[in-house]
Structures are given as C-alpha cells and as structure tokens.
Amino acid sequence: MEFKGKKNNRQLRRALCYSTFQRTTEYPSVIVIGAGFSGIAAARALHDASFQVVVLESRDRIGGRVHTDYSFGFPVDLGASWLHGVCKENPLSSVIGRLGLPLYRTSEENSVLYDHDLESFSLFDVNGNQISQDLVSKVGETFESILKETEAIRLESSEDMSIQQAISIVFERRPDLRLEGLAQKVLQWYLCRMEGWFAADADTISLKGWDQEVLLPGGHGLMVRGYLPVINTLAKGLDIRLNHRVTKIVRHYNGVKVTVEDGSAFEADAAIITTPLGVLKSNSIKFEPRLPEWKEEAINDLGVGIENKIILHFEKVFWPNVEFLGVVAETTYECSYFLNLHKATGHSVLVYMPAGQLAREIEKMSDEDASNFAFKQLKRILPNASEPEQLISK
Image (cartoon, rainbow, N blue to C red):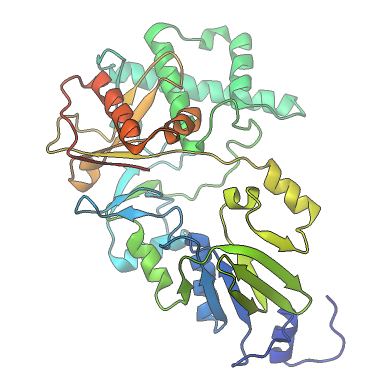
C-alpha cells in the first residue's frame, strides 16, 4: 500500500488497519480467533499496546493444546507439558520464572529427538524382561549413525522421501548397521520415540525437513504444576468470549466482520486467525473473499500429527524409578512407552503416549477401552501391576 502526503501517527495507524468503522476510542481494534497459546500471546501484546482486542474461542476453556486437568486432586497436563529450551531466549522462561513455577529437567542436551537423557529409560521386551542399559546405549549410538547416513541421501536426492525410506537405503548401503534379534527391537523403539516426537509415522516424516527445526538451547523441562498458570497469567485482563465458534470471516477494504455460530457478529479493523490447522482443513470457517490459492494449497498439503495421552493414577508406585518405561518389539507400531510422573511430581501416575497410526486407532475406542488397552501394555512389562484407581483418556 502506498501513502501520499504526510499523515500523523494516528492517521497512519488507522490507515494500516483499514479503519472506517465508528470507534469509541482512537485506537485500532483487532479480533483474535482462537484462545490457544498463540492467540492469547497475540492478544496480550496488542492489549498491552493499547489496541482494542476481543478473543473468540470455540471451546469452553482457554489454552488450546494446553489443558491442565485437576480431577485427580493435583495438576496433570493432558496437552503440552514441556518447556523445550530452558533459556532466557525462550519468552516463556521469564513468565515461568516470574511465577515461581518449578521445572523438572529431563534433558540437558539441545536435542531435536530426545526430551529425556538415555539413562532415564528402562526398556522391557514383550515378556517383561528388562533390557540392559549397555545394549540400550549401544543401539542408541547405532540409531544416531543411521540418521547421520541419511544426510548423504538427502543431499543426493532432489526429491523428498520419508525418513523410513531413507533408513532402508542406508541399510542397503551399510549392512553393517543392520541389527538383529533384541537389538533390532530396541532400534524399533528408538524409531518409535522419533515418531512420538513428531507425532507421525516414520513413513510420513520428511527426510528433508525432520531436523530443520531450530530448537532453543538449555534442554527440556517438564512443567511440574502444569501449564495452566502460565496461560492464565497471559490471559489476565483480556476480553475473551468462550463458546464462540467462528463460522464466517468477511474482509472488506476497511475492516473485517466475523460471524459466530449463533449468528452474532463482531467488526474490527483487523483479525488474527490462530485456529488449529485441522480447523482450517475442515473448511468449517468460510472466508469472503476466499483465501489466496497458495494459502489454500498450503493448508491442504500440510499434515496433522497425532499423539494421545492416557493417564493412569495408581494407589502406590510399583515401577522402576526412571522417567520413561518402554516396550520394545518387532515394529514401531507394537512398541510403546510410559512417562513416569512420579519421578517429576511425586504423584503415582503413569502416562501412556501412543502416536501416529496407533494413536489414530486408539482414538476410535471408547475412553474405557483405550484405558484398558494402555493398562494391557503396562501389564506386558510389569505383570504384577495393580489396577489404576483413576484414569483419563485424551
């Protein structure tokens, strides 16, 4: 947009926001759609800069993927639960520190793959036999070597491929990296953990893109008291309308009009859309005019990963004092792992965390069947496991 002549700051700011609506104040107005972390953070910044802001959220709560549950009598995160990058460069670190919220450090390394140090794993085969830490470490080194070899394949190929296909090529070129027997099952578990990190199956993880994220330094920290205090702090004083499902967004040359499910409408100079990718892919929000073709193509082409949590609360602890319990098997689909919250929080809770295809299949189950499935996996490695007192499936 080109501006001719001189304008004062107020005029320029209004012009940039395409404002011709009648306002009660001189400040521009913005509608933020979605009260997840990105939406709340955007609204917080605008509010603090004296913009008029209203946040429209379709659910009956704020937080989006941040969802701290208190039904056990203590906080358990059903959604996001780690701070990845415990450092001053991470804007969340200062908020967490200011609130005095404790972090349980699960890794000191700036790792793209592992949010736990290797010595915190305790792996078992499907018959409940614990696997030696020496074998676990050696297979971990082999897995790193395999991933290193895929870098050459990435450089050689102009076309992208899955990380699984690249690993198959590595085995053809480097048969010395092939493993057999129990070691091969442990290797599958490492690949299972990789799938958990990306919430996707290995045959859908991009070779060219899997390690391109820039992770902040400082390692990983688990939110001991949950993420809800953080999102509540950022949301304090904001105008947030819950149960407001947006169905239509109309963009004019001088502003936007947003319509929600009950027919009511909101007008403003601009709108920020922070809805999940899945909502955009469902086309449940109608845009007038349509989004640019390149944006529609990007929405259609991007995939949506999935990782679930099934939380099991027991009367007392009967498992090893490690952060992760894992089941190794012939395929990643058969592998599984449990997060031990007792080590971090003192509560006797295990969290079963399936990802990819297994997670999609578990989502089709009832909560009771999903919880029974998780407990069955636990019984495979700990035959004397006691029944959980309470459980949550999300």
